[in-house]
Length: 352
Ligand code: NAD
Ligand code: TYD
Image (cartoon, rainbow, N blue to C red; front, top):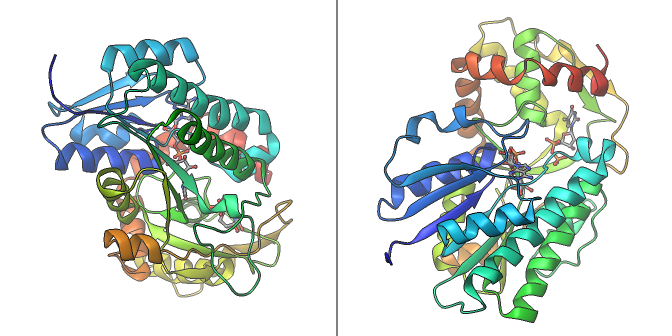
């Protein structure tokens, strides 16, 4: 039997997953990297065109909610490690259809844990299950304070409740069966390849098309933004150097109120599109608030900084400029993902 390290990455065709796959394929030519993804509306193999022919990469279409399929695939590939990113990831969709979030995020995670256990029969030497989670499990903050690794879970949306449940199951498998796990809880990501239902790519796309920019409520909601490639670097680091049974918070030290962020984005877009100043800002439209809208998220990322030496490398200005650049240079990608089903989602969510 070969001694080659095999890592199975779930959700590798999605936004963050595609950056993780690309980085692992480039950094570890000796590993075998398996990308397991169901290719839902959010998964897109176009994200990985540049590396799809690499010798150390393989794509497998699979659905983590199918337990028999997961057992079969785990037996076939015998992964030493799992980096689990597959999820339903959009809060607004979770408000419309919570069940899909329970099925994928909770049941899907349990299926992976079971398949990993069944494969290795609790002989865990050299094995690792890395579960990717979100800061949203901690609920909401007031004007001050930061989420740390010991902040009590207090999820408010069906999305964050499903992620919290999956985090608990991973931890429980660690305690109960000795499954070697690590969990990271990260703040809001932005960057190339993000599906244009999330704030930044949605607004970039709407500005390009001169559609209204739907700011929820008064826009005074705060998020902590991290450039996706810095997240992928952190994931590589935690996978290789994180301690079993530990949680690490990952964040950008970069808090913005939505309305301030949108105004900066508008300015940069005006410049990039050679439109007159104020053009994009005039598209801002305040709309009905999201139910249960968390007021503020902010991460204390000092543990991963102290213990593993990670910190963000890209400033917000730079990251935003690179993101805008990417969307403007990839209009084909944007066109492909915003055709078909996207239109009906958009009409249902925001009206025609
Ligand atoms: P995404 O929605 O862009 O991608 C999710 C991927 O999972 C897609 O490729 C999709 O096809 C796949 N998938 C969905 N259901 C599946 C199933 N049943 N079986 C197999 N594959 C399936 O999500 P993202 O923004 O890249 O987030 C990835 C992970 O990171 C998620 O677990 C999310 O909770 C977490 N996270 C995201 C953010 C963020 O800001 N985007 C922040 C912190 C944590
Ligand atoms: P989002 O990108 O959906 O991420 P999350 O809800 O996981 O933080 O939203 C980021 C913030 O932007 C959040 O406070 C909701 C707000 N928002 C809008 O104001 N309008 C929109 O159309 C969207 C999608 C989000």
